[in-house]
Image (cartoon, rainbow, N blue to C red; front, side, top):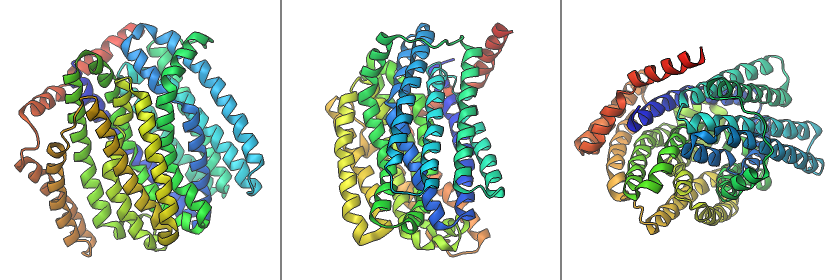
Length: 493
């Protein structure tokens, strides 16, 4: 299978899984938000944000480095994943002990303490799952990785629904996350074992050191990025109250449920970045420009819908009690554009072996975000974190692009972004004209807006001849995919 075909295959499966998984996760969040009070939803958001932060610290960039090293040499699969799995056990055990100590000193209720501890254990299970899914990503068998992702979201939705019916409350939601995450870990372990090789735990200190030395700078930057996404809620909780947290969390969780789209689509590009970065700087730059353009293209329509239709989206998704959050929803929508672009850069810097540069620039941007939160929350309340999100995401993308330009890797930003921007403005005009219409007219306007967006892109000649040629070549991935899986299944039988 050609590289363009692998990219298109992974992109199509990634988009499908992102849409399905994103809808399922969004449905999960909305079910919880509608089933409990705003204050209880604020508690759930705080517990989830805390646990995700813990998982990001534990992650330390290790799965990403496993992907990079396995991509370079497939023969190292067993020692790398075996040593990685044992290292993950050590790290996750230490993190669970640390969380237990921290929880003892928190001035919150017992139910909240137990929920924090349980949710932290649940997120550690996803850390273990990531260690095995790294092998699937490195071999670019992403369809199996996406299958696990979707099944996980289906199971989580079902378990959350059951917990609501059983009136188990916050602790029930924690159990739902724990069970679904454990089953995801088991799924990836079974698939890797059956498809590639048995992976015994390997306690190899030399491999641990090698992985950690490469992973820690990248992990530090990635951790700060994930912390920034949770920092909004944590700081808002500290400076205001749980009702304000709940109002902000409604539109914030809706917008963040869409993060699976750029995250799912960016990670399959990592093997390509890793190979081209060391073989041809020109090819690497070309891949960078193409991916930047593609992520801009998919982010603009989403941002426009959030900006133009924030009221009907909140009304339909969360109900009238969340309508005061419309300004936050609109700012979060605009922030989706730089947020989508930002997901590419950790892989770009890792491929160039510039993890320390990525970490340093991320530290600067994280400090800026914290300062913005402290400055904007007092005058703007729960709208302050949304404004901080927009400004900080724009700033970090600009910083990273300048850093890459200093490494002779230019995005040609003006050429890449102005055409999608023009198409997005045309789309916004259509949506704004129908935002107060009836539901049928709104649905028609949404379809028309997407058509207008596409027409403007084509009229402005957004896609080059070479991009069209690669797209056509990549779309012919299905016969090679069938042949590849037929060969694998025959080998395993």
